[in-house]
Image (cartoon, rainbow, N blue to C red):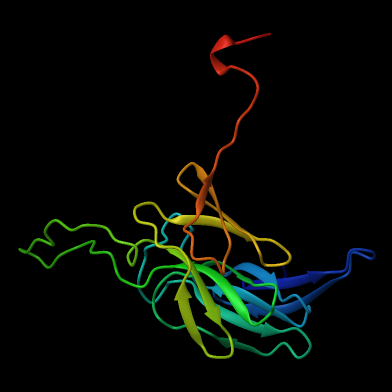
Length: 194
């Protein structure tokens, strides 16, 4: 709006009045309010979510914006994509999808990267970022296709996400791995009923 820059706007639902909270030449992605409404976390820069393993200077990094004074600061600067970052219900932790190890993709001229085995560190998984300690821990350890579109319940007791074409459910504090959600419907696809 009005400039070539990206903007993060708040919309007052009753009056439809908008307020520019943040403007930047870099893209702003997946903004999410803190439970108390005083902060917003968002991704700055970044490639489309279909390139979650990208590592480099254009990777989406986590930024925090204070709503009252519009101050913002970077929370990460590790060169890995951070996607769908959102506050956990306690307001002290963030949920994000990222990887901790670079996936080999190209080799030097005349050399081969060789055959490699994928692992959970290269696969974009769910991570929890502690705002106070500035530390992170891996919540899922899946290999292969990345975790996408995570959602957390209002009380923080249930996390749901997608991997490939399956939905998974997990409890963040539990030691059990994520469980696949079976979805059933009562109509036979092959019958072609009219």
